[in-house]
Length: 95
Image 1 (cartoon, rainbow, N blue to C red):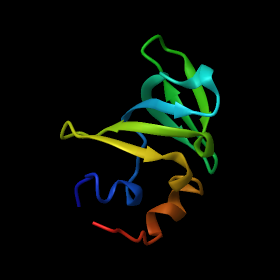
Image 2: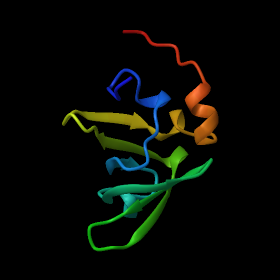
Image 3: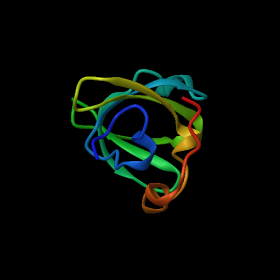
């Protein structure tokens, strides 16, 4: 199954390009890079400058760049939890 806007929450997000679109911490807005690692509560981004930036999932909204060129805005609160458990979880869709 391919990653798309409808099923992104059931897929692995490591390796995708991401940008912090909104954050409770104003210093984190605009951080952009490749998702390098994901834990239960954080996402680690590798910036173009080679820095690793760790952001809390519950505090941000991420703009994910899918391989087909689609941009998807994801509320980090939907990503909170262990990545392997999130892949199994069913998500109610309204579309």
